[in-house]
Image (cartoon, rainbow, N blue to C red; front, side):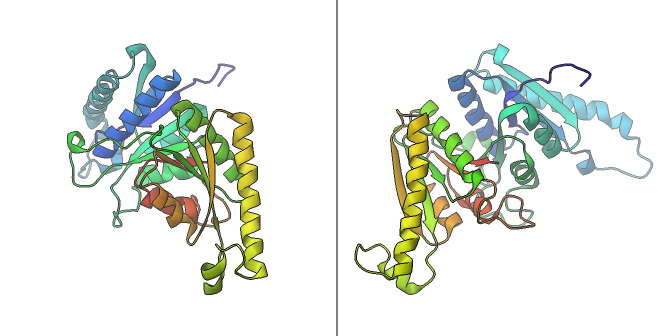
Length: 307
């Protein structure tokens, strides 16, 4: 950048006026307020989706698209102004891929917040192309706020935030990414005054394991070893948080079953679920990893994806 300092965007939120992006904007604005951060609203106009005809001069259309984009981000900034001082709010808009612009902005952001489609949306993509691409490729943590389908923005209740009544949940395995997720979860729990619940999902290879692994004397040598390994992992993660954030109340739990679904189920009562983008559940061709993808798609509460 020719020796110039790169800009610092603080918290970046993608905004397109949809129900999901409205919830994302509210979540991002409140987080910026609590943490004293700058909020940057980003909107990208997908020119490829603009109806066109042969020999159409796109240059004649660009001013109209830019005017509409500016009106949209101004509307979002006005909405965010109910939470933040105007000096804390910036807006950006481009003609081009919203996902690409958000990923680029993530290089200089502390957090990117995106909205997504309602649960159960399978056709046209599980998460929506923008939210999936950003969560998979961003250079900083990405928080996905899900918007229910079939409702106008004004009819959508905001999701619960982490707090004394809504804990932060973080899933861990023995990967480096999971430990970074633990660090991020501890920071969120401290800043939001929430308890932290650290969970690992052990692999139970047989029905015998399911029947006996939770008992003190039952089970096989293997099932006891599985549980001991899981408890050691949780102890390390819990001690890591307690050392960095001694005021955060930390609990731990070993679960059994499908890791992604088990963590997603905990989102029913949580204020935030935190996962690593790729852990032991990740595999080639799935940029988010199988576990993180399942959690983002199925959890009822916001999900923070940490790289």
